[in-house]
Length: 456
Ligand code: UDP
Image (cartoon, rainbow, N blue to C red; front, side, top):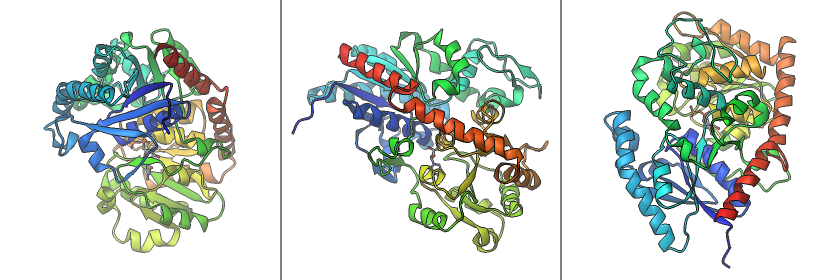
């Protein structure tokens, strides 16, 4: 039987786990409201997918590096430049092919890491929507770097920086791409996210109004901002909804059975879940401190150590220390872990997806930001939402074992952590309310779909 769709959206994420995940979840939500979805990703990225199960169609296009993608390029700058040259054509060809197949595209939802997608969209007269996968606070910071309000690099340590629309931040809170001169090319791309933005119909942000209201109000004066998050599968937010846990696109293979079987045997709220996401490379000295900090805290722990990081674990850690109290896995089904009743806190690098997932599932955090936007996310977790503590680095940039031990204890055990745990419960409710029927994000998604239908 043929399904008639209200409209057809082409979703075009930057090829990275932390970008494709939220855009896939948003796609599922649009699809549940009757919109046809096609996700366009690169051939090389699709090849790396270990787990590939989605209810939406996926099409592969060339970025000019079909064998290795970003890894194959000489530099990040070379990758971005070639992706634009080749991708402008291959994305256009895909839109033409879809039309030939009888599925013309009405709208392109693109990742602003790839701002040239707007030109492709305009060429075909499509509705254009930018989808920012980071927090509105971070987007605001990059905007003010672009406008010269935040000077480069903010060298003075502990200097307060006033950014319109944001709470006062310190130089150590700004994304590392701003403060590190070696990241100049990446920063160029990050500020380039705003190019073409004056020509788009929508600016979608994976956040929710209640979480970032002041900065959202400020940015809304500039752009047609619409918060649509948190984009986590509906089943985690509302048990009455159909189970969509199994859908995922993952570069790493999750050790689902090992994790869940082990967690099922742990007491309620007893486990520290530790993960630094899909990219961060932790210094060997830091790994050692973390291992001893976990041991000293004397809690059970589930620690995700990607296979490329495993050699940094202290000698005999896996055989001796980890086997007593912990489980170390190369990748886990993070949402299923975070929602498990045995989890007591999340020791996290504060990637935006992980932060939103912890908020949505009410898990208090110990933050250990490593790079990118993680420091500002950690600041918000501690100072604004008050749902976690920050494990402070020493002058060498390492968080020592005693600090890790103390932070875990604060969140897990002591009276001081009660407020943090209560706040985590409060934010969980607010996150759910935002995506529930009639909530701020749900209304925005409804409006997006209904306008799309009118135009299509
Ligand atoms: N993730 C996962 N299993 C793991 C670790 C992480 O599924 O063992 C997922 C996590 O749920 C999140 C994403 O990977 O959706 C990581 O994104 P985030 O923005 O937190 O960090 P990044 O990887 O971009 O640094």
